[in-house]
Image (cartoon, rainbow, N blue to C red; front, side, top):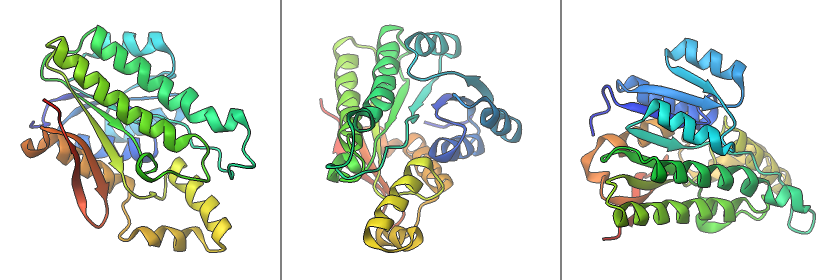
Length: 252
């Protein structure tokens, strides 16, 4: 899929991984609309990159349907989420444990439902950003790992429904396989694990190998969209050392 002129919506597009993706997509000629709750950060990103912006809460079900109906994107990237409340299992309360479910999973449900029920046009693609915690867990971040695995499952479910309804919309999962500094989630995780291990956050991040900045991450996501060899995959791991790895092939 040549990204030049493609209409792309990125949720959580005002900072962190979302902003890195917006930057990379704009560089490849896409027409991007960034969605986020922080109007001030959106305004800065919009002015710098020349992208459209919509200030909205991604957990608002009506906003998901309204925005997709108005923008009609060729590509939707579901990235918005809340940084996990970092604490050991024996110290975390229920509200903090379930925060990723109340934000990340709820938003995922509403936006995936909106894509399927609107629906988007045949040939559209939806990328759901998950986490390496969905593969290996994350003992200091409560329900975060489970929430990110649920998003992965939901992308698979949505892809199956798309096939059953003959919609022609592809749903794929993006799995960053390392903590990424300069992001709300990455910095929260690195700081918490570094304190537990008695090292600096910078030293902790080196354990993942070659670093991956938000813009590096964005470039890899753009490659997943741009390179035809990735069209058939269901889930992709992204890492600074190994680049893009297909984690799961699409089901028939």
